[in-house]
Each structure stands twice: as structure tokens, then as C-alpha cells.
Length: 304
Figure (cartoon, rainbow, N blue to C red):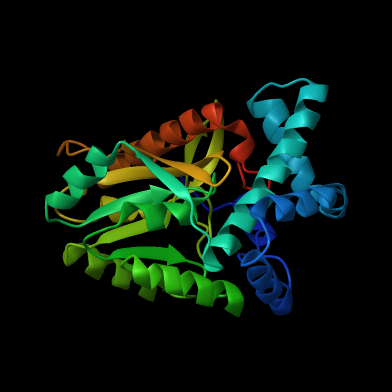
């Protein structure tokens, strides 16, 4: 059911949409990672975690609530996982910059037949990703034969954009920036009509307050209406795949794929089909969070 309340507006504003740090810091980190082992940068990052957790109390409290309320952990266990969560997030950020610096990672595809089967059908389809694990790595692993159009924030700093754009161009991926209006929606619809692939995050509002209330980890949460409405707006049901790229070892990732697909029952209204598809995504998200609880990187009060 759609909801555009102030609660979601507040949560959206808490996320600024770009990577922390100044441009020179990003450039310096990329240069450093060309010569220094990633494990050493991990260690240096770990020493700053206590400071980061203190200076960002709202973010820290949101993750504390996530472990206490959604996973039911005790106080001590919550604290341990709170630290592990922040360390995992630091690793993900460093791994992104390491990829810009030319470092290679072992990325395993769990369920490649799902992606190849949908891609070989020749029609446009959607992938829905999330702010868990390292979603950016997933695009580099899929090796799409048709162009993959990724909806993303257009205000990233230059060092991030340049490194990302180089890897995107090598992997047949186009970044479609979110605009203040709806022009990006027309770009995505045209891509689908041309038989291309569209990827949108399904777990964070940005650029719109329209949302759907779904059950995630046993409690109601607001998911963006846009990706699910887009999947049900075309005449024929679009294939939809949930994509999660989880860190499973040092310089190792596993991309997990799950078919969602919008319901094709003509007796259902478009609104109902959109809601059902969103809940299917929420179920897939809940499952991956139970398996990898420390790799949840929405640092705001996600649940009501």
C-alpha cells in the first residue's frame, strides 16, 4: 500500500547519496591501493572505527536497533555485530576503490543459469539490487551481452565517478543518474522496450517519497514504489531478478540471484501486482539478511 508520509522523507534526507571524504582523499586512496596490500588498508580503517561510530551516533543507533529488534540479539551480541557491521562496510568501500585502482577480485556467480536464461529470451528485463554486500561488484560479474542500465545517484565525487565509469564501460553498463523530474524514468522505459536490462535499488528511497509497505525481517518497512511499478507498467510481465553481491572472503564475493517476476494474473489490478512483486523482493531481502546479517548498509531507521 502506497505511503508518502514524513517518516520516509526524514529517512531519505538522512542519506546524502555520495561517498564520504574529500576528492583528494579519494584520489590518494586509489593511488595508495595500487601499491599497498588491501589487508593493510583494512587494518588502518579498523583503527578509526570507534571514532566513526561516535561521530555518527544516529547511524550507529539505527544499526543497533536493526540487530536488537530485527534479529533479536542480546546487548553483548548486538555490540559485537555492530562493530562487525561497520568493519564490513569499511571493507566494502575499500574494495570499491581497490577495483578503481585495478585490483582484481574473485567473484562467483550463484545461479548463473537464472541470469542467462532470462537474458537469452531477448526481451528487456529488470534486476533489483540492494544496499547489502557490495552491489557495485555484481554488475562487473554479470558480463551482460546486452546493455545494463543502472539507476544511480548522479552527484558522486569525481574520483569515484571516473573509476566507476571506466569499469562500467568495460562491462557494457550505463549509469542513468536520478533527476529532479522523471526524465530518468523515460530513459529506463526506453531501454526496456529496446530489450536492454535495467537495474534499480529496491531498498532505499531517493528522488521520490512514494513507497510500498512490505514485511522485511518480520516488521513493516517502506520500499520505493518506483522499481516495482516500472516492472508492472508494461503490457507483458517483465522478468525480474533480485541481485545480491555478498563478501564471502578476502577479495572474494558471491553474487546470489533470485527470480521474482511480476504476477501475470489478469484478475489482479496493477496496484496489487506491484505490491505482490515488492513483497517477493522483501522476502528475498529478508532471506539474504538472515544469512549475512552484518552486511546490511542502510544506516538509518529503515523500519517504522
